Amino acid sequence: MVDEKKLEEAFKLIIEALGDDPKREGLIETPHRAASMYMEMFNGMNYTNDELIELFNKTFDEDYLTDSKNLVVIKDIDIFSYCEHHIALMYDMTCDIAYIPNGKVIGLSKLARIADMVSKRLQLQERITNDVLYVVKGITKSNDIAVRIRGSHSCVSARGVKKKSKTETFSSIGSLTKEVFL
Image (cartoon, rainbow, N blue to C red; front, top):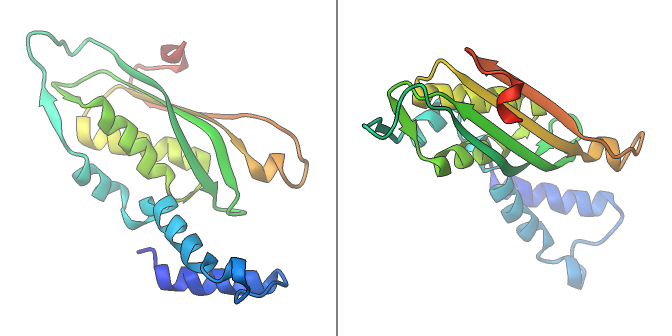
């Protein structure tokens, strides 16, 4: 579980390590505000993938209007995360999810919530992609799922090589390929 008190203490130490005074006017409440912000940004750290399956496990049986051969695609779910190597922001990220129902359909908002919650961890983009696929599979029981994530990494753009770039990751099971997102 994310520990808010430890975060506050850590931010106070960071301010001191940066050579500033955490007791000065503009910084007095900063450790508390920063800890609260991190509690929100890293909320996904409080759940395992299996717990997310339980949390978002709300599906609907297919009916006469749906068919297990139909493809469901949701694109451009905006997410962000922090790389576990530098705790640097991964930004301008989008997540695309596609699946063929296996007798069950999941609400589109649940797919967006899954992508959001999985990304709110210290992560690698590759792991976010696989985690989303794992959770969607656990809920829908579909045998055909694809997940694509595209994003920029501040550990590349703001430090080191300082180059703007996009990274794309893709993972799938069953018959779906990258072309499903074209």
